[in-house]
Image (cartoon, rainbow, N blue to C red; front, top):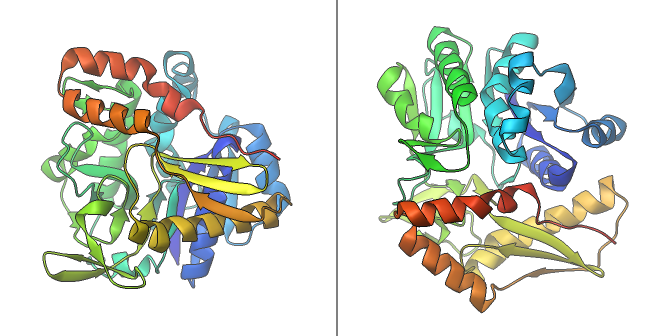
Amino acid sequence: MMNFCTLFDSYYMHKGLALYRSLLKNCLDFHLYIMAFDFPCYEKLKNLGLNNVTIRYICDFETEELISLKDQRTKAEYCWTCGPAIIEYFIETFSLNNCTYLDADLMFMASPQIIFDEFDKSVSIAISEHFHNETIGGKYCVQFMYFRNDIEGRKCLKWWKERCIEWCYARYEDGKYGDQKYLDSFPLLFENVYIIKNRGVGIAPWNMNFYTYDIKGENVIFNNRKYPCVFFHFHGTRVTCNSNELLLKAITYDVSPKIERCFFLPYLDLLLEVYRIYFNVNLSSVKVEKRMFWERFYSFIKRKCKHSKVMQFLYYKVFKIRYDGYESISK
């Protein structure tokens, strides 16, 4: 049995349900624990009667310590703050031998068992790299994190939880960035930490153009080595609806025809299923949107100025807009 957990609210529910359906299509034996971050999301998920799923409502989990941080952090920052505590909560509440956290905006294209087969069962913690050259956000990505319910796994989870409660903001400051830069310390502070080597784990907008792919997009090729594409991470993508058409755009990066065909169009098809099955919304077509000139120019300036403290300050003043609301799905 593969134990997974994730978190999302009603605003992100379409992506969370797409993650769930991708697991259904690629896993023979799994259970997904979901923390619903608002009541409409919790109520909707409970009414859907999803198989292989356990749902908890954020208000039944929050401690006074966490609640005291709500007004100090944006919606996204608060979600990040709660992440380690939620993993710990599910492990403790359901006496799990292990639990793997998944970001809600993932789409599995192959069985995650491929990842688990890569490391020994004695591993306490497994994390994946960003596989890019950027250092501000950290070497490792929160997207897929395995914790074993043993001494080292619990010690690491507790340490991460405490650090996120102390500081977790959507900006780079004193070697910290959100909940994510803390992961750089895992291999230094804890034993039995495994770094996932498969380049097909966490293909994402920030690294998708580094690779070549086979014809069907089932394998990624890097340095003359072939890796199975396990999941794509749709971070920084915007889903909108124009009349009867479902639109998907990568905000910060250009999407090549190969990437569009292998990953973005299948994700749109998955989202079509989500809207038809769970929301009774029938959309007739899909489209991968191209970035406007000003969006490309903005991304260029951001990359050039990212290491300037002045530009970091200006950028992160508007950074919460990216996380607190730009997707609009309506009929």
